[in-house]
Image 1 (cartoon, one colour):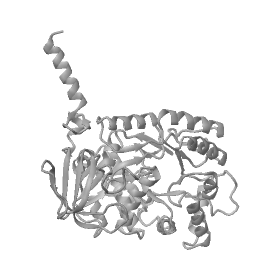
Image 2 (cartoon, rainbow, N blue to C red; image 1 turned 120 degrees about the vertical axis):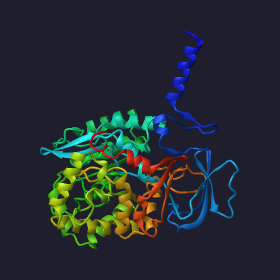
Image 3 (cartoon, rainbow, N blue to C red; image 1 turned 90 degrees about the vertical axis):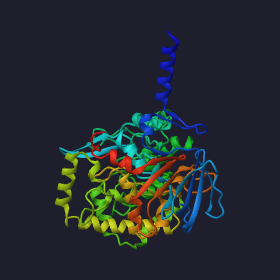
Image 4 (cartoon, helix red, strand yellow; image 1 turned 120 degrees about the horizontal axis):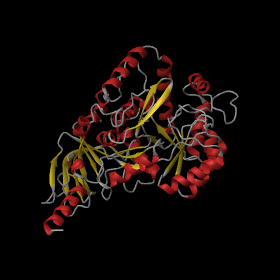
Amino acid sequence: MAFSTRWHLVLSALLLLGSFVPGFAQQFTPQVQEFIKVQEPSVALVDAKIIDGTGRPALLHQTVLLKQGRIVQVGPVKKVKVPADAKVINCAGKTLIPGLVMLHEHLYYTMPMGGFFNIAQMPYSFPRLYLAGGATTIRTAGSIEPQTDLAIKRLIGEGKLIGPDMDVTAPYMEEPSLDIPALNTINGPEDAAASTKFWADKGCTSFKMYMHATRADLKAVVEQAHQRKLKVTGHLASITYREAAEIGIDNLEHGFMASSDFMPNKAPDVADYPASRQALLRLPVNSPEMKSLISFLVSKRVALTSTLPVFEPYTGREVVLGGGMEALIPQLQEREQATWQQNQNKDTASLRLFKKEMVWEKQFYDAGGLLVSGTDPTGAGRTIAGYSNRRQLELLVEGGFTPVQAIKISTLNGAIYLGREKEIGTIEAGKQADLILINGDPEKDIQQVRRMEIVFKKGVGFDSAKLFETMKGKVGLN
């Protein structure tokens, strides 16, 4: 082979590996590089308002220095010396918040069809949309194609795909019951234990119990997961929250919406979702029974995931939450518009329970519970990755949290649950440079979180608007 031919092949291989910035360890393919706005090894974000994720009051006129993908200094403009080699970004009139850490996300989209839920993996659009919407770290909280999710995680890490860091959850732990073809099923606790071992060995780092799993199933999964220092969450129905906490579950999904604790004469290990929903509708918002359950969960250190977007009622609200209608393929846009129209003023019970849920989540938080954020892009198809992550912040504020609290719940609290609070979740010196630059002030108007400009992941700044723009018409297809 001629020398020139060999050199051409080497050069082509290097181009496929992506761009390399001297002194900066991350490499990206040209397809990823197209969406990168900032990649210099040294960056100075000057004169920003900072809501740092700790829950402390916001700080004005701050400079944040990034170096080699980490935050090296945070302080007042007058006290921070900007290095001569730094790329300077003027942040006057803008706000910096930490990258979102969202714990109930999926890489698939659900489409009700012919009496079934058709579930389709979105390996291209959803990872990009999550990052565009400020989610720099996600937990998938249930996988239908775990091998795909694990591959996406790897490819993102290699700079070949765009997306957040991922905590990949194994396939659902669910006994045969629901007619959802894509849903994994187990047959008893021995199978549940074997499945936990198998997927942990494959690289899954979280496990999720589903609606018809039994207490014995949960016990088997908890034992196997905890031996490996991995965690277990659940969208429950057969098992009550109190039973799950006693067994040792780490996290409960959907706030209190999936709680069957208040059903009269509930049969053990039997799911009756309509009856549990009616029990929640009957339960007074300030009931002693709920207060007792909250106290018990807090004492057991069970985290609670708020997933308000997937429960948002239809009446008087957006068709697709967070303004993501254009992300859908045209056929789905038509379907969602028609469904929204049909449901106007017909969901008063859902609205009433939604408002109760907001209060119960605030009660849990005020009692000292670890409340974390997620979106659950499933349901009727109105909840879309990225758009819904921003919407979750807005809904937390609607539910009575301050913007500072909503941001903490959606950043630091998620990092604490994942055991990564020393690395991510706040804007502090020494941490990974995961930040969001917002052209506005979400403390004055929380909807200004929709004005994200740059999402920094490990110090690399991605163009949020461009990512959203290029994903229009993609969801439902890929």
